[in-house]
Length: 290
Image 1 (cartoon, helix red, strand yellow):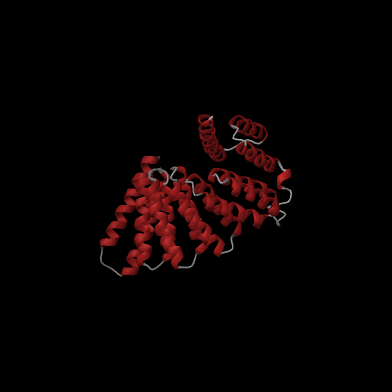
Image 2 (cartoon, rainbow, N blue to C red):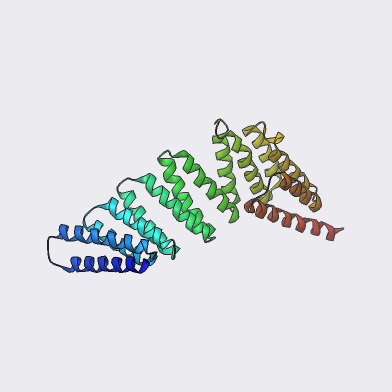
């Protein structure tokens, strides 16, 4: 079955190449070739011959550009990207960027934003935090401009997470606090405020300024008067106390206790490990002085 489909795809592709090399009315020639290339791409895709399918869709995009159909060209680049994602993620990025450029030209900003987000997800899977952050940031900006607020906020939170991973703590803190403020008056979103404030607090702890940490805790109580009575708020207060006491054992116990009720994800665990290691260094330095 797959071999037959691949053979059909190759046949359609060959006919398209011949059509493009033939004499004739330019518009008609490219329309016929586009039809054949779409069939070729679909056949290769059904045969799971991903690279050949992607190549056919890229040729289809070229034809659509010749026909001055930017939307159809962009759609063809997206089809190529979907195929490349199976085998060559970076090639998928190139195709999505080509599609985004066309969508921006024709004013389809929300669609462009979705594909920026898609590129961010590709880089996230490749554990390239810097590039992932770059594209989630672009997506957030476009979503916000189009007032697609939910998607825009999701992308901003991704930017904050990657910023923290890259030790860009002020940027991460600003995003988490801003989202918390925007969410507090929403019946739908207010329950997520304690999570955003916890994330901001963990970034504050990583930054390591004790004065700023205490000011931040006061600020979080201003944002949400109920924060310090939540499990997340109490967790932050206990962490701050352990740090002020330079007590690594107490810090570890506080983390274990919280984790036993509310499972810490890898991202928060990484931040807490960073804080714990800094606390160990301070403790060792203090022991050496005594």
